[in-house]
Image (tube, rainbow, N blue to C red; front, side, top):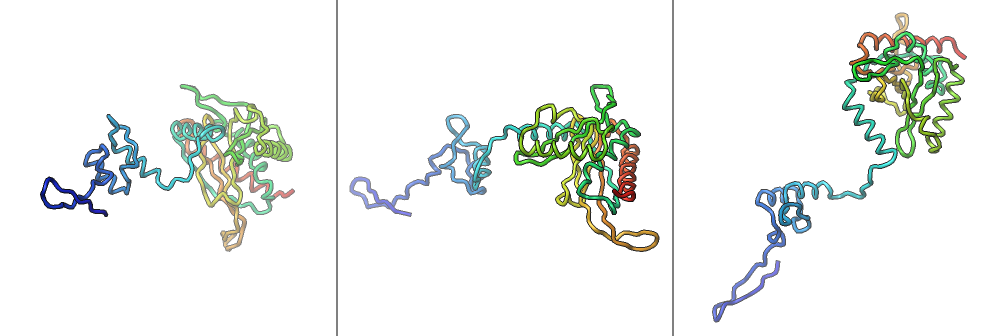
Length: 280
């Protein structure tokens, strides 16, 4: 701090301390206290209040922006994801049911097409999971068009495998691979990314022990496949090591009752385990 000396008339020299830069800004004492608590220099804060006065929001915004390396506008695919996830979280009262599945004997490289095939068969028995709530009506679909969650450089996309009720596992696998490649390359049409009636999601080894996928609005249910790993399980009174993973179904409780969702999930698991037992 520098001391400046001044005098009036013939009087003695007096040490004068210049005012702090923050003293010159327009802000209330409460805002000044907040700035001090948040370590914000008021002289660097643009005021948005009347006559350029600095208000509380200005200080908090400055504090939040401290240390920010970059700001990226939300647009394109990310904007669509933001809108879809926000809508799903706001509008769908979702519940998740989870059960274990023994994947022994199943080719885990084909887990998604096999699960889609199993889900399509189970949806015939539990059609309320292949439906949509429209106003005060529940619309049931004859078609089973399954969305598959695909991670791309631009974010998560959900291309659609059409008419899964009539496709073999091999046909589903080929179409799912084509759609996933197209999603990552950005070559899919808009029609290939909409109007699914049900969704299956799997993050493979990154899937974790359990996650709770959001229902892909306006659908009413989504099947989740979670990480498969060798675990100790009880079989015929003995502890054995088996490749076990969780299978979940998240569902819109306005349309689907818990008992029916649980029965659907267990039916899918039974089909997966039967496919594993049957082998290639």
